[in-house]
Length: 208
Image (cartoon, rainbow, N blue to C red; front, side):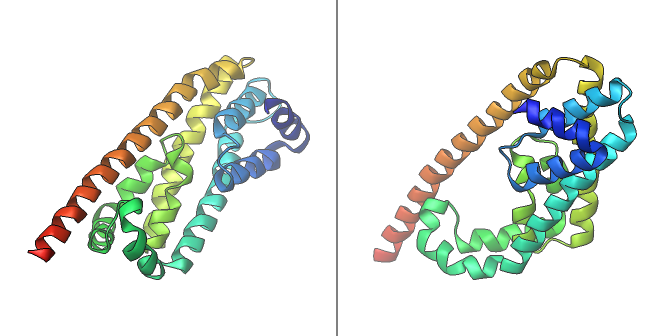
């Protein structure tokens, strides 16, 4: 995968970096852990400037972040209410929890989005709950911009420092990505188990 990323960045420069980061945000299997270190290596060799590399990567990612946010906001969580009411057990969420999440997002959504942008795997998905729960666009944009700029700067800086070894960057970030996936999977299993028992207890109390 890294070969064509290298060729595109060499041929298209900053526009290529922005385009790749946009694709990475829309289609997560294209990893920023490859794109930005390669761009950082190009900066280390004098082919690109480091600050413009970070800026172009951030701009591309932010375009993708905004697309996801606006799409989710246009859909709206209330249109999903029938789905949640019917499949809530498997989605591990109930409608009262959705209402509580809306109130929580109103108070703490900025921190959630900022922190989420710094986490591998999760960072590309943060826009969806923010849009569904109608987080203020200004707060969403600022938190996303700061978090995304930090993430792209870290990866580009790693590439700049290591210069010719993109594999080393992938080996450093890869375990973190896997750890996040494990935590998400464990969290889902836990939520599935506890939610099922909550529903069962509610059904028993209704019968009584």
